Image (cartoon, rainbow, N blue to C red; front, side, top):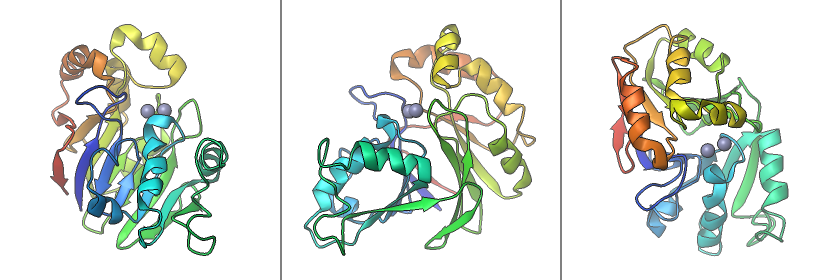
Length: 254
Ligand SMILES: [Zn+2]
Ligand SMILES: [Zn+2]
């Protein structure tokens, strides 16, 4: 499995894009940074988008991607998420007011966007990838994803405050290759993190205690760029042996 990091931050600034992790050139996890990162040919290769939750920094480029691809004769894109997440995206954005309803364009029989509802903790297949959504704890319905290609699995937390179930499942898996976990705010903004259901370095340290193995690489995502120096300092001070800051443009192989 390979991953290209289109965006890895929790807000947008020059040089910092919001979440978008592209797996094997075709499966995208969150769509905060697609159209500003990929050529039209690369955008056309995307077949499926796994959405962690409905917040704008994770979905905004679904809208622009649909607009870019409609009418080019390409196959449809599956937008994959749980029922609650899809209902919000479909009702709020693809409603012919905020944006055209690309589930009907260019034709109702072959639209550019298709919504595909999944249930949490059930395995689905995308090509040769096995994907499982697991509930996390955010201000809206949110999930993390486990993605496996048979040789190894990765976990992507999505936005979350302290949570348990994803760690239980990560501990059950024997082939975990990498963990992508959010840490949004520095420790002095823990109150803000609590009410917005995000992690701080202190809360991250407590979360990582739930993971039994200490040798799995942990990649930090969704840092707010305006606090990045404090975040990197405080996260480094946790002293975890395998912690990395996921960089935009980085390519990883698992
Ligand atoms: Zn976010
Ligand atoms: Zn969010």
